[in-house]
Length: 408
Length: 81
Image (cartoon, rainbow over all chains, first blue to last red):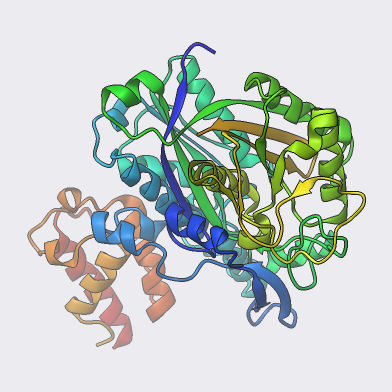
């Protein structure tokens, strides 16, 4: 790894707020964005159903619109709108909006599990429900999974390498690693990385219900009575920047991306594998030289499903062995829900702020310890930490694993 | 009359995401940045709202916004009569 990679901007929008700062404030205060919502699919849909979800409040795009107008925002699906707002928050904080470096030496890599699901469902309603052959002309560009990165490139005038990654719940973790790779190989000096998701739609929620992944009430990571995840929408973006480039332009350096690990279980489409998840973590730990670190803040994938959390706790033991309980574990999906493609990026945004402030936010909705998850879980209230490093896990359906290592 | 010129200009501003104040009759479609996709999106919305089917292929070659507005108003309001 020849070029060091600085983090110079953080952006986020979720049920917890419309900026990275608001999201951090909410998790630090132990606020939960998950609530029961009724999903109503319209006249051709079955009876409405109620599921826990963490939905983004309207008005999330106000800051972007006030500064830059509605240039691209109004013509794209919600998942791309969320990506635009998170990107704006991060670029604005990094001092890069309208900066000449965006023109040719900047890349964009964002991850999404799916594309424009809201648009897809509306178009299906027209086709199958209303039996209409006439689709809205923007149907295809709004649905495509690369629609968000294209929107960000158009909004901010980015002409370098731009593409999307898709690996279900690990999409934005893969995006971070790919963006860092573009800086390492000299193809870019800055990479706008992260992800977004807006699949809390009536049809999609039924699909998640069918796979029995959703909690009845809320997300309780690592709690003995956990019963599933809470779907969320939102997006998060980090600005990765060549260290020397960041210093030369006088940017505030918020942290460092030290490296990542990636693996594939090649095993089962929904069940995790200890060998696969621990391999990704071990790679990231080696890349960042954290094997012997006194304390590493671990931001767990922690979906709140029985299988994930048990396997993840075992992975932490497999990687850190007798030092496993030295490392505080947080699980912020208990606050912001599971943003699928956007989760790893939002967890990275939160973990970096936790390192900078020296406090770990508590796992919410936790009722009772699970003997099968014997890790140092941060519960109850925020806990002061000495960690200077963080590990962010993302273990996706289909056995696609990624782990990210940061310092701050 | 189903639609006034003002209402149509509101729709064009909305669909093509253009500042309503810049929409003058003399402005060219190219200068306003109104693309082919913007035009077919507008035709789609007109059909949704007013039930008027106008195919893009039926539209004559046009340079200015005024020409497009006159053509569209003629078609929409003719069918209303």
